Length: 79
Image (cartoon, rainbow, N blue to C red; front, side):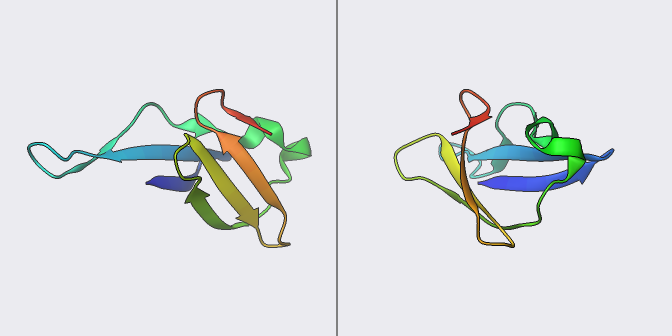
């Protein structure tokens, strides 16, 4: 599970993990990832959808204009 947030003028991806064993809680998984640096002049598009790509540590982000981007949680880069 992931969340896109706007904090202090920066857009961040916050990954979460589901704890199966004991509590069944949803816990933050790593630090928030600032994706603002990947966009020119802070012109960050409005994201409409965010989904995990099955079997990977990658996210598919689709903006309001329909442009799709794949983001790696491992390398913290778009491809």
